[in-house]
Length: 383
Image (cartoon, rainbow, N blue to C red; front, side, top):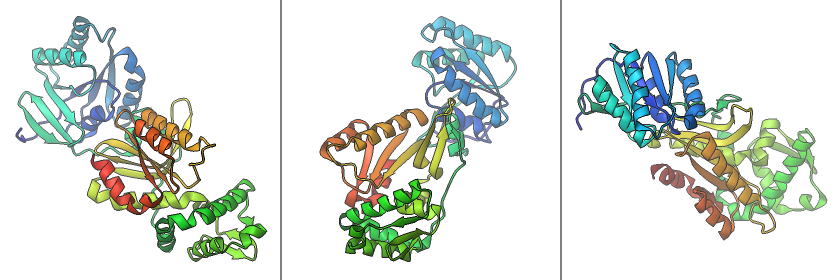
């Protein structure tokens, strides 16, 4: 299909509301296609989704109008509702975005578009193109790149604490390299250090005291020197002194989130990542909060990574199962059907937990696979 010269942006977009927000937001927010008004054709099931779309559009300075569809299964009534939209906007340039809605909605909308001489387009979110079907078939690249704030807003989520993109701390580089390349030998001392940092956090303190057994552990002593060299803590006899609350969090497991975020950041250009964040707190309309350890946008889809350093493979514990179910639920709720989830775990999982992850469509990177995280993310995003 040929590329064609650009035409003036339509004054009105008619959008069929569905679970996928990106296809309606991308062209409406694109400078070359941005309309003065968006008409949202809304079935009863999609009223909440229409509310969130309208909020994002109004924030961008676009007027919105809702056309309620009494019965999305009745072709004649669908056609009547669309004809009313056409009649009310006679003389205006209108374009139908046929990407969303049900098949019956799309058929009725296209029939009205032909009769009313509307332009018609489809959004290919994978290639970032608008495919014009009428009046003359051609492709037009999209220049609007959705940011996390707009994307999540389209699904009814706000950012509770802004977006954190932690800068690389080069003093941590050697430590992270050691932690990733020596997974097997560091599991036990790292668990001990996590426990110490947890005790300090629960006591709202920057201090922790080693037990006699911990003080005699050569493996823990070596690990503490690594963290001390990185400026995260200091050791005075049996006492640990964390450099700050942020460094205490880093010691307690935040280092894995930092490693994952740095890996994602390093792939930004290669994978054309649109936006990325660490420790992203999202809030739904009811005030329920969820924290996403690492999140990024690629190919107009949301990718969510959960990071775990705690042991989750004990038969008596359900921690791994709970983590997997929670991550799958967050992916389903926060970013729509196209959202993908990954669990990055410093420790291994049992076979039954791996099977559960596969059933939930959660990607896994565990234990020694962390050294190949870049390769794993590259393949995950490229599928």
